[in-house]
Length: 328
Image (tube, rainbow, N blue to C red; front, side, top):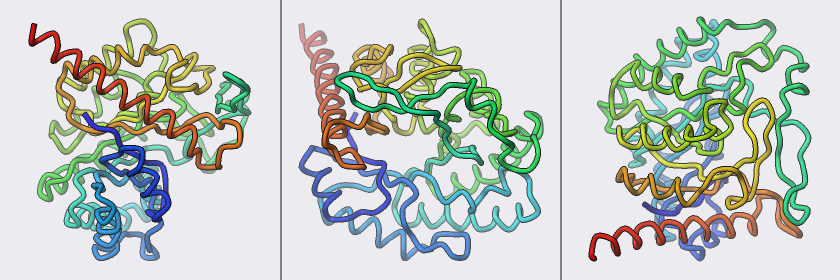
């Protein structure tokens, strides 16, 4: 298990130096600023991106998300679906051939939703969600879509792209719908429960059909309370479906929740990390969203340094603790 840094779009020397100084081994770039005028990423641009990170002694372990307009017609079965599928196949092939082993993406045509933020420990600002506010928002894509047709669109895509990913030796994972409620703006939030993810990975049973495990969003799910979140980690971890982890914490679950510091939400993060270790998870963790703290930058350098240090401390605690028990 390793600590990484992510959630930035450009591999600037400043970001990479920051990640390197705070002990990251793996880098994840979220919707990187690459040329994509034709609705796809080209091989030479992705290779250049990977090399820029390797010069700082770290590995570009995953790319997360492409621009939504690369594949919105695939999600919604629009008139340009087939054209977008061809471009996405080319993009996935190019990511793999550039030497990047993981591509994470989402199935949210309307992106992540939040309502007004809240104040948490020490007056830090955290994102929040209130379904009573959000459900009053207008349609985002002209009409309401049914759950059935959205599943049909997802299954159609998974059955096409999984054999391509297997051929190229790349693993693909989908982020849960955030927030994990039934529908927003007329779009069903398909991947909002434990059962929905079980269904997803069975569409095509394959190492290349896996999960971008945002623990924060899984923790927001209605069925995550009690033992739920720990059961999810163990179930998908034992089946080697977890590609990497967004290691963040929350207070509350849908219909209302807010994000937290990594050590102040309702999830026992030490217990969660122990389970990752027990199921032999060999991927990396990133901090994901962080609260905005006093005099921090917009990206959250201080918040991310705190979260990343906490992650590294937990990794060391559970791995050395297990070693100590085995050596007795």
